[in-house]
Length: 341
Image 1: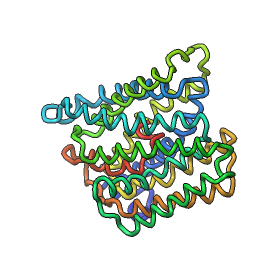
Image 2: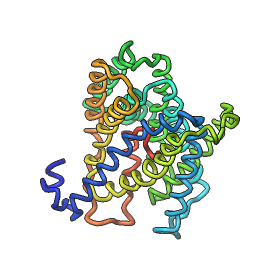
Image 3: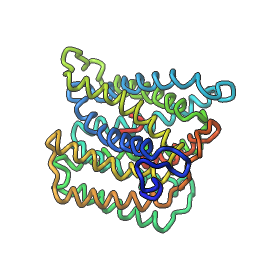
Image 4: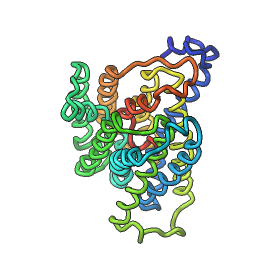
């Protein structure tokens, strides 16, 4: 990373982008996406979880889609019915199952533990790609899967979950599985080439599915506006403005101006940020066993992502560059609590 940033904060990257801009964008992705686990936990204190997630994605997705659909190649890149269908499948898997699972899971599991369990997304992504897409499994990735499973097993052992029931933590593993399945589908799905437009569509579709799930769960009758605390309201606004709009825009900008391998480093940082915030702001207990499990899972993620594409940044923003494909490749490392939360 240091060499890529030319060893000087005031210099430029190989593509001519100011290093300071890359560093700031990375810090936004590191801290904001890492903090969304904490924000979710605070928001659901006085809000029904699935309904909160639904409204959040509908607002964020509506804003993003409205602001981006009229920009870029509007003639040749109009969202079609087939693309909306793809967005619905991706939104259901990644946002309704993935993010919705995290939101419900944090009612029973500490936010830091949830972040560590969700950090196993690359592990499940590689496994599903091998089982259902026939992709070859690199020896390093295979070793990373073994290490990752060991980290999960260690995290599930009594004493590491901060008091959370093992059953609740096992249920939370459905979230990264849904995220990985949606990621695998998104690699080949027919979507707009403009990544922000595609993301807005996915958020809108996922918000609708989450709304239906909330209604089926009986959450519509649990809404009491007067009972929503200021703290929960601020966390909800933070998830929309910073988690969805600011951080994801910074992420897409990084895909155009920094190497994919550099951008992927957020996968190592976000879970650690979530654990520290849960400990410092929510009083969540961190045991030695939790720290060891966290280290094992982060190492496993590093081993798996070491086999991901290491593309170089473009010298300048190129409207024809397929950043949507790059974004799909990195989705496998992107925790459901944050993208595009």
